[in-house]
Image (cartoon, rainbow, N blue to C red; front, side, top):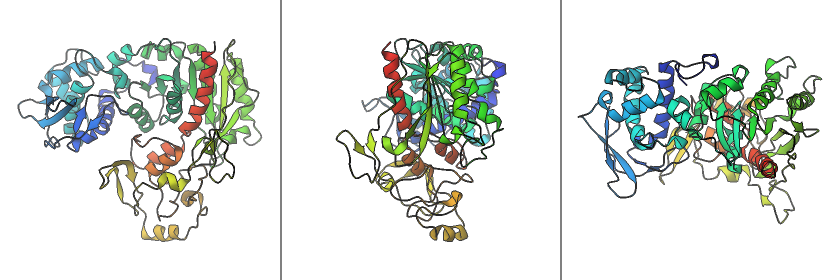
Length: 503
């Protein structure tokens, strides 16, 4: 996604913007190396698996050397190297040439200018991480593009994305932080592209779905032709999935029937039809059934049918607690399929909600909210960190508690379970209501006098613990609260996959 390779109408980025996003992604990807740990050669959830190693003092250096598998365990350790600078590093030059951010045969001055295009505080880190990445992932001759968080910015990587013939592929529109796509990937779909306009959410998607190109643009501005020009492999996907903005429908929002965001669903069917998608899925809040007299369920269903998709008469509602998530959150799912494909059967609950007296032989018990949070560290207001290392060696991500004034702490202390205003509602210990990020703050912890951390909210939503949310702490709550619990999208995706594979 740079000025040279991305269609201008989709919002090309400057070199400095690309460098800034790369610096952020690489810093999180190689955070354990900064802690003095070795970088593994295996793909993990962030594209890199981290393993313990000696502290060689890499932090704070502007260049790094690499000892190949000194211990025989497939690890690469980092050490300072004073002989070589970033501008003279051949591997970094080759990698940036592949990305297309500079010429394909860059000079040392071009490499240095690329690093210098980010704020001064980020330059040494970017230089170190470019050196690591050029050896661990973007290696010569076989770069591991399928596990690279930088593929959105890479001409070479996008051209190497395979069409995945024989597998179920999906394009994720209004991708957000990637929760809907995560459920589909758990069910067996391969995400070949995502579109998300918000920078921080797009970064979260890139980091946690390495190898998936994420186009940072408005879906309104995207056409199938331009998307395919940016990523030629996007053709006839098995499904186009989307979670359009819900603020205009939500009970916690304005519920304005004239809110322009209420009509963004029209672009989902448009793109699905032009891409030749075999099916389409739209997810949203139950509040869209009727907004000040306007029945948006009918509008969305009619839109999908006009685009050539057969649909259910009405969307189905799935409740999170029926699928192992300790929330009473419900989400509506619209499904459309091309002629010749059977509409999927609605998912059957896999769990009995917490507190249910009778649990069938085929059902698991949904854990209580307290059980989901019990092994996370107790924190006072303002305590914690984005990478909180515990005494037992565990690292808890996105675990910075919001700082409250003494007055606010006293106010929170008086809130009973289930009580309080929407911005400071205290969670109950059994099952949560739908999480709402009021004033960018999450609900109050069941028994601690503070709002919950982003990690605690992610636990309640059903995200895995290694799912890292990017951007400032002030924007992370919205990424989590706006997400569909991945277990719900997985349940729907499994049913859809059965229909697609039956043809």
